[in-house]
Length: 106
Image (cartoon, rainbow, N blue to C red):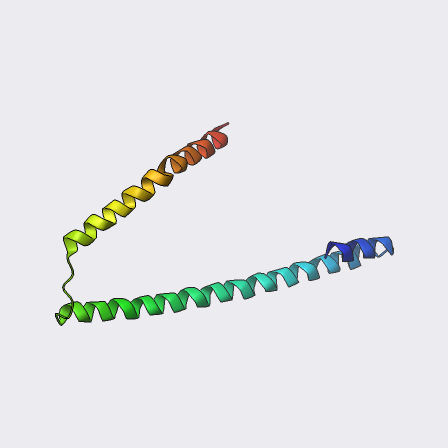
């Protein structure tokens, strides 16, 4: 859109026309952002709906005795996963956070 503004300025368009063109460009970009936001919202709500269906189905399967989850093993595997992720990125997260706090303090 900047080419449009440059063309209007080269033609000697007045300030009102330039302001109108800038507001139109802003409205177009805002419209695009709303469309993208709506798409993201639809994807997230669909994901939440599928997640609810899966959780309800898993709950019914456990309640009816069709599956027998081993909670101790699941929590152990989850703890191992969290520990692995923290070892991979934990120091970077701490360093980045302290760097930002130091940057704000200066």
